[in-house]
Amino acid sequence: MDEQELELNYRKRANRTVLLCAVTFCISRITAEFLAYGSNLQNVVKIAIAACIALTGLLFLQRLNLKSLPFIIPFSMYMSYLVSAYTIDSYKYFSSVYLIALIIVIAYFSVKNYLIFIAVTLTINLLLSIFVLDGHPTVSGSVWMHFALMLIGSLMLFLVLYYAISKSNEIDRAFASFGALMRVTPSALILVDKDNKIKYLSRSVTKVLNVREPKNFIDRNFLELFEDKSVKELLDDIAKKRSFYENHQKITINDQVKTFDVFADKMSSDATSGMFFMLNDISEIVRLKELAEQDSLMDSLIQIPNRRSFDKQISQEWNYASRDRVNLSFLMIDIDFFKNYNDTYGHRQGDELLKTAGKIFKSSLKRSTDFIARLGGEEFGVLLHATNSYQANVTAERIRQTIENEVILTATGEKTKFTVSIGVASVIPGAGMEYSFLIEEADKALYRAKQNGRNRVWVTDLA
Image (cartoon, rainbow, N blue to C red):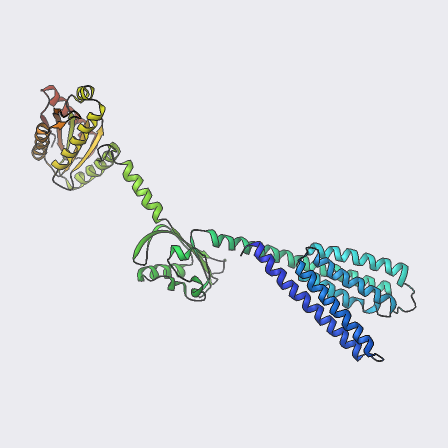
């Protein structure tokens, strides 16, 4: 419910209140005339007709929905009474009608109109008291005392009403803002009382929690929104703690595991008060983040891990080998004369060579723990966990021979071949050693392989 809807609802209630006051007043006035001593039927009929005209006019004004209606109605009522007060000895009863008029203004929750009405009527009343009614033979009692009492009463009523209406308007605005938030927020918001019974649900629970007809869950335990037993236990524990915050909380919704940011807290400092839950579904964000991380760790051309992924992997493998006291072998592979191949056949054909090399490297690795990455350009690296220098040499030779026997066709159908040089280093990580040492030794071995004619494997055993 927004502010416009709140205003419309209040206006409807105010119109009904005013109409009820007017009907009650007219009926009372007709009844009083009928029961009055010396009354006659003609006067009763006149008053009844006047009452019907007044009520019809009121309905018409309410239908027009005039913004000035809160001022028009009580002011007209006041002026009508002043006319009658001048002709008959009823001025001393003026406060009754005046308070009715004030109540009508209050019904519209308009402090501005209330102040205007007070100022205008008391000014008229003051002038009437000075120039007309003071000493009038039909008026009994002290007009000035009557005016003073009405002024003091009006000001006191204003102070009380101003405070009450201001607070009421603040609450209304807060409620309207809260209602707007509950409608548009993508998070599932759940408000519960001290007994954990649902008092309010945001519209988003339909989508986030896959709950149909959320209004059917009002005044029911909020755990009924969930079916999975483990989720109910988690949220029940949160409800007992009365405060909770957790990022990336896994929650099962309709047999589907989703990731949520979960926040819960008390509605006030009172530990026994109600509380609210906010469940923000970040499953899609997490999925996209994981995809982005995977993309950032993959070489887009060859579809194997890149240098960033290699740095991450070798750090983990180094720690595992150090913990288990086993060999970690590293193969540094370089494609021989790749620049010449690129210059001769073009960069597109060079890309095809790199793709072929990547496929052969991956197919030559037999274990799931073996790791291949493109380190940059035509250079590749292979990590072999729990593999000594002899086993690493066997793998390296298998790669070299497969590459040597591979034939790549150009766009014109020409057959081309290429070779690789491989440097192998194997070590059992020790205290004070870093994995950069293994990379440097494999690089030295690769340099030796190139110095000795290329298309060969050179092994350095550091164990």
